[in-house]
Image 1 (cartoon, rainbow, N blue to C red):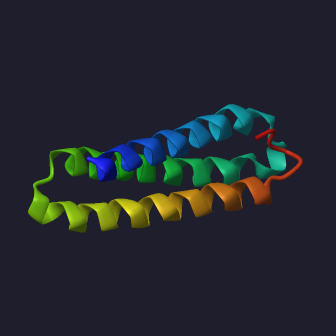
Image 2 (image 1 turned 180 degrees about the horizontal axis):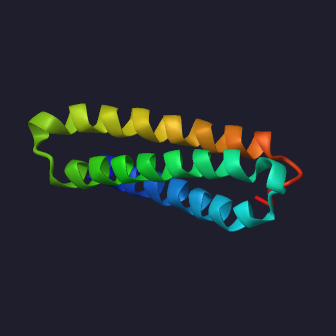
Length: 96
């Protein structure tokens, strides 16, 4: 159960950060808007994948729990790094 609770906290945190980025995306200069839109589209796809992994994790049997947890952790870590990279790339432009 602890694994599932930790996953819930992690996914909520990631989705909150993505929502903040989405809201701030309107403030990006025209020069950067197209690139940021592409990055955010990629993040939306990753969000869907992470959401699917989370749903599978909730339904997992003991046998598959470890495998799904590893997949979820890897995907969520990638998303956290991507969010940090986007924030750094648009520092001063995004208010997050």
